[in-house]
Image (cartoon, rainbow, N blue to C red; front, side, top):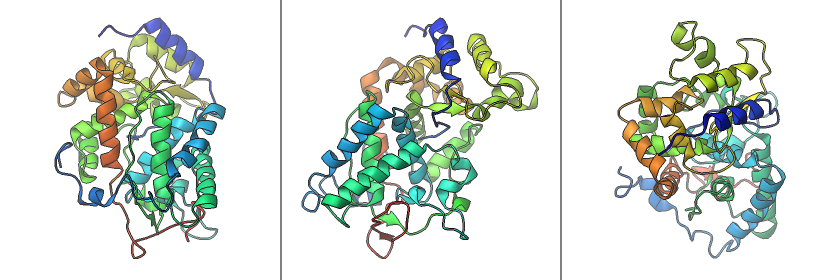
Length: 347
């Protein structure tokens, strides 16, 4: 595979780093892929709402397609929202819940979630309101989030895949559960592999789900140490391509910068869901340390190389990985879950 055009990379990076409206950030956002499945995954079904809400996918897509036209950042924002939901106590819509005045902070208000896109919450809420008007009290917020994430993958140019549904919404949402359950922008490969393993996900899942960074943006604070103080050396990360490093430094000063400034994860095709993300890693154009680590680590490098060569393979594997991640910690029944009418409020 030929390396990406560095002039294009740098010009795009310089252009997009000054954007302030986009909300991005590190997100992953993750049994054998083709054999043993997590037990809870078998409880989900593509036809779960076939009788109770047969037009569910069409209803949700009417909202997602409109939102994507009006505000494209809703796409990567919603995909990231789905990752953050699933990794913290399972795919149960708990990330959508708002904190109650005087009560403990909910997941969405945790420091680690401060850059979650408001547009993503709004999209899910609009879809939920429409679904409630047609199928009241039937469809969970967790399922609407999962379907919305799939829609945005497809709207951005990625694969369309069937979403298995049947999740109930979680009864708890606690900010205190966030830190130990989400990867950080400076997590080591060992830490990433361990975290994904704790969710029933493999090294292969880690590499494939990281491909969601083919769209979306990272805020300066998530890669600042790579620019100015890599591993406490007071120097830049030597693995960053020099021209990309210069472009990033132009908009991300070592201190006192605008916290709303962002850079695209994929500096070659930042608005298209494709496999260019992996080719960028081969050319040392990964913005986050956790992204570039996928290529520098010998355990994951072969996977990166294979996906960089074959877009269709990436699409097929990404769909499988999203289904697998979407089965983490699924709640079923009133004993363990609820069906919220308003995704921001417990029932």
